Length: 317
Image (cartoon, rainbow, N blue to C red; front, side):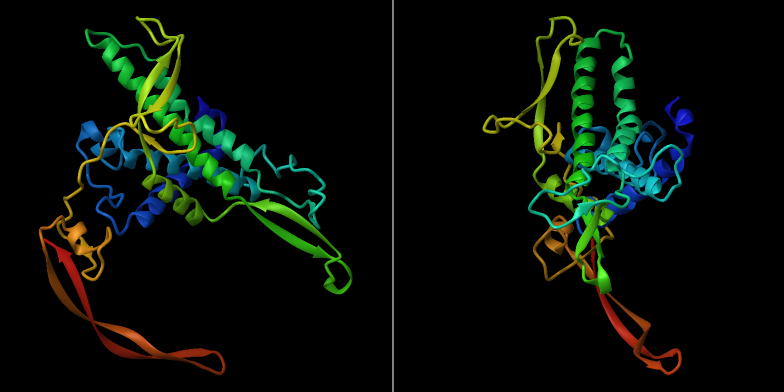
């Protein structure tokens, strides 16, 4: 129903899925888990990333946040380009800047608030739909508790992703005056690059908090009328809120890295010792022809020489 009601945004949502996948693979290209999309058995096809993203791991928290951010980003971008019916510039910014600033708000600010609301509508809908499903069977309460845990964590991470865009919003300005004297300036809010959003979320991935669910004011039979909150598993932490990515279960070691390239000179995640999980690596040498010594010739051509290069790769066993 949501898709039919907002049909003009479906292209943006589809673009967002591709954006999230490419950015995920970029951010994790030098780590064991590299956001790969291997062929999946039928029972695991709910996630293009495989079984690992069906188990409440740290990686799942990153993908959920990134996907939510991508939907908000794509819808906001297409709204500013005039590709979506019913939305326009953000008119909620004050017309006057703070007294200590020498500019006025104007122009066409990217309508990120509208994009965030639409992202919430599309991305969070699945979690609320799961919450309305009825379960039957002996393990009904246990499964219900697990689903509430996952839903609460997913909603937290979805919101975190949208907040990452809001925190990264930039400002562009235009000068006004005689001969570009810039006697006054008009500024408007702009989206950050999606690469910047990806970097923000990647840093948050490293500080994600493992949590457990706690239902306050719940009855013994049902959590329907209670308030379900996330509590850090580590008791030294006071709260989670929306300041951290949250996850439920520890990840596997992701040591199925046979055939991955590594860096023999580094000791971090991309280093061969870490990437290959101690199995060792082989050295592969290849010879390629590449352009070199390029020069600009007037007018208007670029001439290059062909050079033979030797490339050395270290490949995990």
